[in-house]
Amino acid sequence: MTTTTPQLPIPTTGEPIDFWPAKPMNVMKDEWQRLRCRFINANPVGSWGDVILSEWELEACGWEDFHPHTETNFVLEGELHIQSEGKTVILRPGDAARVNPGRTGRYWAPVYARMVTIYGPNPDGLESHSFRYSEI
Image 1 (cartoon, rainbow, N blue to C red):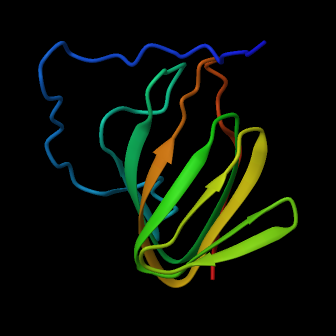
Image 2 (tube, rainbow, N blue to C red):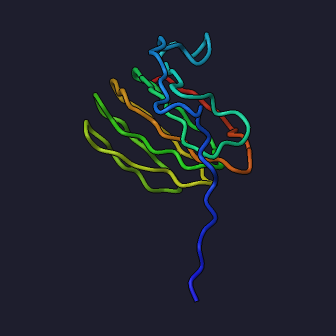
């Protein structure tokens, strides 16, 4: 007997190509000037059945949060450190790593890192929480 995992529908616009024009990077909060991001195809709010793409820059800072969905980081520039549940990896350009759902991830760049991040899906709509920011 084989079991199958139910697949969530992937929402589309009905067009042959979904296009998202470039947006500027923004600081996450006024007091977090060294952490910038832009969400590319959607904001991670509520539930979603597709993935959410974003781009991040960290300048000598760190970020920590708990998220109910997967978070995959692909490093474009610099060096990104990721820690979760006592395990740490160091990513350089071309490297990728995923923090699996239901865990706290800590991300930091001793000098600088720029990466593309993929969230989700997040079918239950649970929110990320326990956000912490620090400068190095």
